[in-house]
Amino acid sequence: MSLGALESTAVAEPGAVTVIIPTFNEAGNVRELLRRLTDAVPARLPCEVLFVDDSTDNTPAVIASAALDCPFPVNVLHREEPVGGLGGAVVEGLRAAGSDWIVVMDADLQHPPALVPDLVAAGEREGADLVVASRYIEGGSRAGLAGGYRIAVSRSATWLTKALFPRRLRGISDPMSGFFAIRRSAVAAAAGSAAGSSAGSAAGSSEAASEGAEVLRPLGYKILLELAVRCRPERPAEVPFVFGDRFAGESKSTAKEGLRFLRHLVELRTAAPAARMVAFGLIGLTGFVPNLLVLYGLTAAGAHYLPAEVVANQFGVAWNFLLIEGLLFRGRRAHRHWADRVGRFALLANADLLLRIPLIALLVTYAGMGVLPATVCGLLATFVLRFVGTEALVYLP
Ligand code: GDD
Ligand code: MN
Image 1 (cartoon, rainbow, N blue to C red):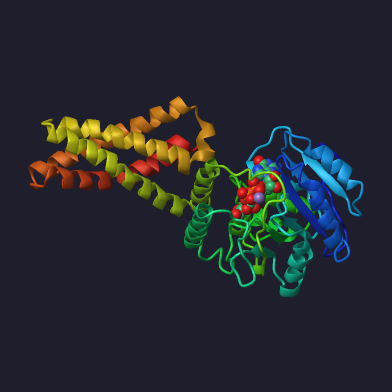
Image 2 (cartoon, helix red, strand yellow; image 1 turned 120 degrees about the vertical axis):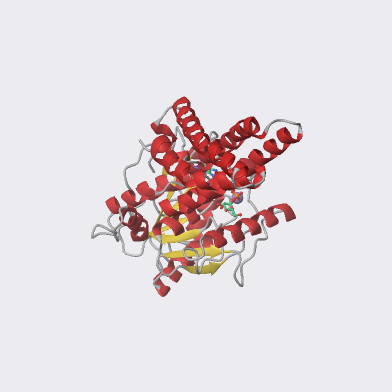
């Protein structure tokens, strides 16, 4: 039992498992959890348990006392300055875990401990790198997902996620699950694929695994999604499970987690430059709405279309800036002070305007186009230029 900073833990036997359990104020659950893990796991599998704890209550003390009755090593990595929420906690655990298999599960007993050996066994049997405990295959259910609202949210999130990553999530019916087993070597492979190569010879070593964990930047709750997309595990398998009721306490998830989840999706989807261009485009398209609305309002109120264009453009620019900052370049804002970014963005937008307004005037005056269609053409024409400029001049170091 060790508290505080922790270098690396390992159960050396082949096929052993490190169970990573993130905890945030779960004092009422951890004793029962360790008891059920003791009943279920060591008889079938060499194991250790690693809690990654961000609690402000006495969870670490309860773990320390309950661990005395456990026949396997129990470690607590307590984070004084937690970063990344639940996902960040699991990544810290991945960095420290040393067994061949890693199982991630919640502390509140919504994930049945009895299933831990089954997940690993399924992985060994099917040669899978990842085994997901799924609520959505025959034999599974989401009994513990209280209320029609949460079920609807969960269902649409799953649908959206599968639609965005059809290839990477093939064979995974429940990418939102927080209960799964993954081979440490597959986590290590993330480092290799991030460097543009396949996992090198170091894959499988614990250095490689912690290197792999460096590439992981989960935002909030969906650590499985992060691993499935970034580590590209081979032949994912699934085992059904019943998502039960919480044993004690309440869910730590808030409405804010929903927003974090959407940002996480955008971040994962736009990791490649080409995909980022498309996202640029989509955000730019949404900028038409405030732009055209203000233009319509001003011209309807009798303003001349040219000054109206200038004013309307500011609304489109501000809208785009906020979305781009919040969604697309969240991880790249640190290179410059926000005032510098606003300045550069505004400069680009004005350069863009300098190009666009004469173009619109040409189209209106000589091609006889209406103000609105001419504006759409002008916006499209200067679009690519603006986004290339934004990427290079605002967000690159
Ligand atoms: N270390 C740490 N830090 N642990 C956290 C944090 C945090 O910021 N937030 C939550 N946890 C821990 C909780 O203590 C619990 O052990 C586990 O993460 C899950 O938290 P819950 O609050 O119980 O989540 P949930 O039941 O709403 O969501 C679960 O089910 C979802 C599927 O509906 C999670 O497993 C989700 O990942 C899953 O998508
Ligand atoms: Mn829960």
